[in-house]
Image 1 (cartoon, rainbow, N blue to C red):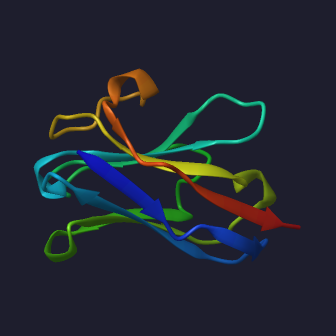
Image 2: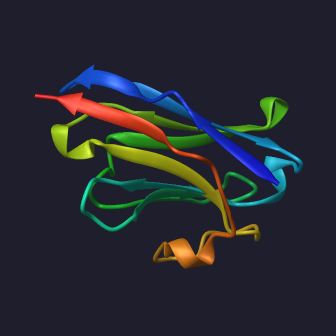
Length: 125
């Protein structure tokens, strides 16, 4: 089971990025997928999660209203659309799978069994 996160980059405050999480070795639609982020010197923070069906989504208060999680079954990919980016969104973003179909809340990294390698998002002021 492998996850590959991509789509990070450098963007100005107020800009947008779309992160992708692709899977190999398993079908993403069978599992919930979460996005975490970790800024230097800070703990890994759960920002969003989507159930296997896509019918249930979760957002942390810090990103609610700005980020949108979605999945494309045909591409076996989960996306995190990030709009109105702020400098405090700067972090390495990881996608992860808990191995079940629903999102446990709150999102603890220890509950997620498979992780992608992370993609850097830098928002300049």
